[in-house]
Image (cartoon, rainbow, N blue to C red):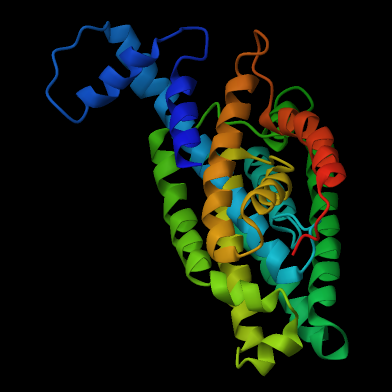
Length: 327
């Protein structure tokens, strides 16, 4: 998986309106680490370092984040159809970004609002689930609460779009909701990397507990695990990871659903192996999709459209080929 990601990483620099040979890409990147005599033009260096490098790093970061959080949620809720947005983080981030665009905020404000509203949506889901968990299955209650909160936040997004200026503000909101990395720079990727890497490392450290939780609460408690505390920790870390990714990329569907399935087919259900493989595979997958999105037509295609078109039949193919249980 690491070699695959490295190959896609280098190849991605050559994709676009200004082609750059792979050897030149490696030379330009090496020139940032060692004093090399440049044999490339300033325009080539500007394209590689100023335009494509931030976008490539952001695509890798977002793909890995969505895949890790999707794998963690699927193990936690013992459901292969769970995606990173199951608890409402995507709907909350959409509302935050839509409000920021409506109020005329710049890109940093849009990203901050998307991140905060994503966390707020999951906090509301957790509060509802914790209040009703004693009366029913806590996992089922949490999932249903996430569906309700997500529906409510999506309704508010529709309300914001209804009152937005149809000539200027509404197209901006609509395009953000489709998902794109066109406006991401190194500063955006660096800020998002902090919660993504922090949350992912905690999830990786809790891989063995996710193995136990996937068998159910009763079995986990019988083995001495504090299921409530562990569930809160996993949800918190997965939410931080997802909210940070969505804040810089917009809504990109199916990545967190498909990639964990593919990784599980390759390495099995052990989360100690599944989570890092999902991260590497997700980074390579979204990077390849981004290359396709910016090279298909003259105008860039939003990432959410490409992942949905490619992901839906691919997911059906995985379901048809899989002859083993998901765990």
